[in-house]
Image (cartoon, rainbow, N blue to C red; front, side, top):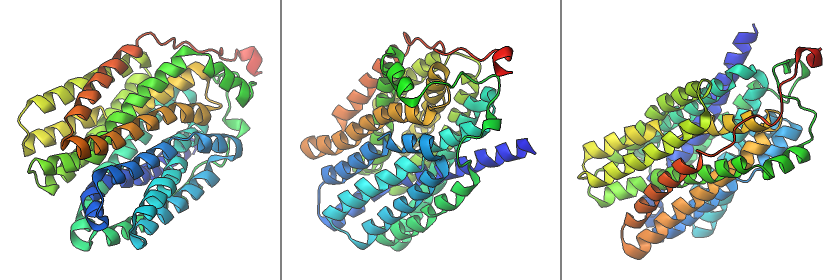
Length: 404
């Protein structure tokens, strides 16, 4: 019976992430029609997306989930997210773009995606299975990208961008319903002798993390991850269109990022339970740099764009189960939503820079060349900084005597 409950929790968590992240990854498809309607440059749309990414990364929601439970935070997040999408559609102006797409959708994502969902799932899943479970949750986000991006492209073509936004808002409301499947808060009978000692307060853990160099190296590495995924997901459709490729190629490439990320996230989550996570992270970031270099060196065709989507997709968010697992491995599971939320803020700082710089550089230079070069350099940087991370647990597991 317990195994069925665990599977149900994982499924619901994966579906929540699929809806929230799949919808978010479709926003790049809206760049050209929205800017055309509003008569603005790409930088302003990019800035609203950058604000969204920054608010998405604020660790407040993780702290609230650790203190008051995951379920109410997820319910609120689903509602706020949907309201933001509705406002974009019914108030098509620059102010509403910043308020709705930037602030409200950012708050919704912060409340209804990886940080809160991973913390909730950790409450129901045994310790030795959590990194693999995190891989499944991350794969759910990838499935959302695979499923929602083509749906959004179809809605855009058939109904226009405003009606498409309204229909996506209705879809996002499902998050609030699925939240009722997840645990409200941690229960004492979920704790076992294999857990790390949990007598520390949140403030003590925060001080401990702030003094640990590995915490900040994970933060910096996740900055790079955010830069990569936000720049590519937001600007690749426009980049391909600028080079004469059809919108269907962009949608296919983004969908392939999603489907191959399902395999990558689960595979690296599985490997993370068997090998040192810091070395896997170093490999991932290094391979991202290699894939981008090859993509830029080859002639840009429909085939090369689709192959790039598949290759970068396998490496896309496989960083999530490894980074969250590394944080939990070092500092324990009790305050994972809070600590991972802080590291995730680094991810979103990178996302802010990747999205905004993409629009800024394009409006200034008329191309994305400089940002692609930055993405390569940052990939190499992230590959190197994960190598010296001290990843030993700071707290020792309880002994049988202590557990008794």
